[in-house]
Image (cartoon, rainbow, N blue to C red; front, side):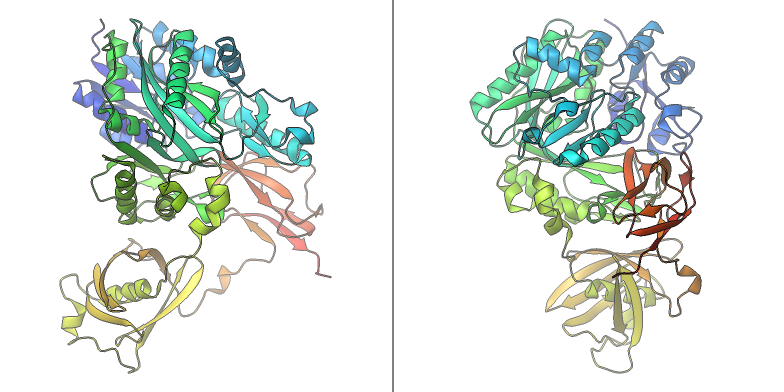
Length: 636
């Protein structure tokens, strides 16, 4: 038995904070590492000690195993937990940790190596008679092979993954997948396999000790995905027959035993619409969605990882599961704009209700360009699936998230969608329903009026209605205020209010009570520190308003055809041969920006001529930076 005393987490953000929470409960000292942008991040503030990794990019910081081991030794840590992502599935790093005399909180390096490449892992599973999808040679693909799924051999999380439905697009998709895989994992190997339409992503959590015991801790469904990255997960996976559950459990245990596994891991399967399972991969680490399994089995998987690393034996059988758990990943992104990641200050993050919130952020923190845009994981556990889904939707609907566009509304609508509530899950959910889930924003008139009334109230402790002798909904030269929200301008009239169906009950700078169509509603109002945005939250929805000045600034205009950076990022590629004077066609990819681990194409807005190119490969750009200018041809 090893007796651990101090733990370094070779990671950042939410997962580092979560691991520190368990380490403290077990009496372990905690050590964080951080890049320069993360110098004041929550995981750094939360640890007993922290060590700087100079630089900003992951390749210079969280992917530098040598620096992390040096940090662990300098801080007196005797164990390293890799979390997920970064070096968590790097066998060489695990070996180096062990060679330095530190305890590795993970599986043996040989097990990591055996499953590190999806192509080699599938060969191992084929030998163990686990059902597999047969690979397709991209160079020999025919229309009969479509649709195809391109996947990075060395990693997951949706990086290096593309769906190809047209052979003419295969070459470009293959190049993009290889470039993204090389950037994310340092390995550009990509393979192709049939893409299963309306398949389900079902996985089995396994836990194994060094004494021969392997637990299969039920199933999880992770079918709701965007860009092949999970958005909503739940345990147990609904609607599976007992025979299929047994098959999945047995296959997962067989996979673990095949590589002499130890610690926590996940075996992932694709389940077709007719119930046939196919092995996808084995993740030799803790999964992002592990909290739903913890809730259902009433376990702390991180605590079990640590005890297994110390040499403890698991009981012969795991505890019995109870109830149902659902997790939603709250991202700083705009689903209506091709899931565009968002950066900037997070002024408020408050999620009510009896739910678990795992996050790496607090009010006032900044979401930067270098890392994944996930703000938090929100988990609800209840005796039944409908109760858990309802509790999670209610908590997210009541959340106050200020400063950044998020996928919160998408999550609420997804959880309340008839297909989801009925347990009809598959990986094509967002392809079919994204327009419905992101369109039709709630009417903002009442919220905009609340913003105007809050702005007009001079002090927090002097209700405006009482101070002005009451509000009258009559026409008498009302004051006018204009706001912009989600690209739409709203004009409201107040003092007195001039909007049919709305009456003012009371107003302060932070809380406005209105009667809307005979129903009294509370509107919580908050203004950011520089007074450029106003946030209004109510049961009718959440709105962010930007006050519109009476006289617009002429310098705000942009030259026609200007291509502006939709987010801060790094220019990683420019179309071959592209230069001022080059002819371009509408929709042609001109350059690629990398932000938050994903590549984003910048397309020509129309056919014409590139008249200016203001960036070069490797250049970092800020949000709104001028990238290029296209002079479009006149319409015929």
